[in-house]
Image (cartoon, rainbow, N blue to C red; front, top):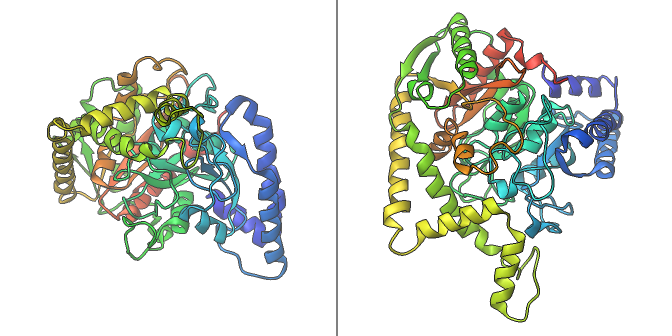
Length: 481
């Protein structure tokens, strides 16, 4: 059963109060954080005060919405008014935003309870959460392994039951990849469906906020609460938001599912991952879906395309951290020294690497050769998806080529780290929705993720296929030791 629905029933039946539920999660955080390190900031007092307000509304006989009294964790690149927002970077170590992001504002208005801010790769740049300037987050299934990234703190908090649900952001797989590594559900919505106002920008044409949850129904309920048009975000889509829970069915008769052949031919795919995903595809057939192979010939070009476009946008977005307006400052005699020392001390290695790649790709003489060409390839990738969705309702493939790797294993090999995003990146380049959900475990007891990709604004189909698969299997019921 959905965690949100179960907690909602306890609240309205007065079996438990919002304060009791919130305290239970705060106790779990206190017990497990010494091992997991998923939170950068815990806002316990504030959470209990919010919970007391929900209890007062229930006592007064008010009808409360599904998200009221639900304890949630927030990735620390979402601006929270009056609460430190660091992006896991030294340059924003003491930054307290004077305003609230649209998603956190919507959650607060719905009565959801923010437990705190979770760890991430610095400025969301990374696939293991090892690029955080503050701490190393452990994977709840094996704390010596990474939780994935960049939303590793949120995924680990959900898997370790240190929150009911969480929010992450996904630029090239940063919700789906940690969801796969931590054995939870992660959704990257259609670009523009969820407002980016108050999300600290990494690559503006790719970033999207989405849910990390224990079940598909929880993802549907959380998306329902945060989706919708926002005039403060110029890329926000003005579309009607359907009731996503209406899509939750247990059979797939008449649904057409395409297997992306290129993802199974990819180098470095773990045999255990391949076997689990092939078994999941058989399960979709058993549920009544028609399955066929689909070729997306430019799928493998996603990785090099992304690593030109995303760093280019990052180099532009991160130019604002200069020690002048906000964030850390190295006080120096000359302005130039202040700029260079502030940025040299404030940014970590991976952020510097991406700023330099992006600045180079955008520089005079190289713009056409790199950035412009990457944008043209991006269009071709989008066209491959459009052709595929002319034949099928959804596409499936592994979320990641491997299961969670040991902390420190790939720190000195950025290229090997980047290859982990092979399956997730094309979805961002095309602006499409993608859902990762657990579909098995390898022989070391580490979770494996199945990725379902939909056409633009067809989150309802992702929930339909994901829910039917989830209800027919028991992977989502397993709890880390």
